[in-house]
Image 1 (cartoon, one colour):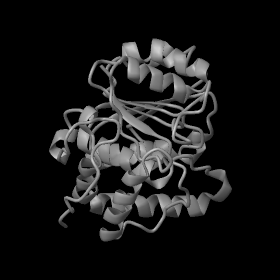
Image 2 (cartoon, helix red, strand yellow):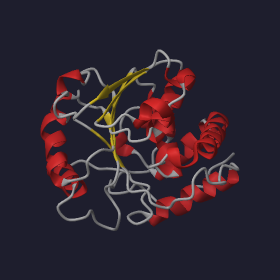
Image 3 (cartoon, helix red, strand yellow):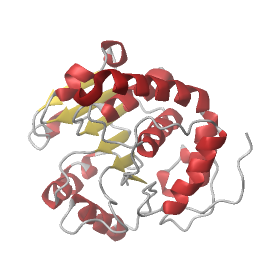
Image 4 (spheres, helix red, strand yellow):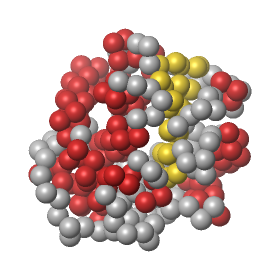
Length: 258
């Protein structure tokens, strides 16, 4: 499939359009073009995972409360496929929807281990054993009390936990410094609107990104509707447009630490 060149540039970046080959080097230059090319590159595997997740969601019903929308989940999967991280840290699992997408990427890569942290353990009964076997470690408890269990070797960081400003300040001050520079990072529940909610994790994170002069990418329909518009066309051309879950609520941001 040929991707049209008539596409918007990077969100909050100012850099030129990059190819998927550049994604592996840094999320600083992540653009809608690069993401589009990842959709093309991994379309067959992504299609299989989408079918897997759709079936699982239908079977579990209300016992699986999916948090990520399709764009957030798919982009997370695609970036993990491209980066091929050996150690992934997930702070916040809830019912395990993001956990399953991450583990699916590690399975399809044939390499990598996921370390998940949450104060509740709903995820344990939801994640299939064949998906978690030999590639997943779950730690129950307040991550602020189990900080020492977070591997310093993490090469992908995923955060979707407490969304208050206090927790945002905690991980900016405690988790970010312990993760090595250049680590791709994604944080959920930032852009529920054009701007983060006041006194929220999102507002803390955005202030930190500005202070660090860091760019970010977001598929948020509220913040970056042009990104959603373009990716929806790509997905339609690839026949990946049938929803896995019905949601347009996608406030995640992607950026690089260090």
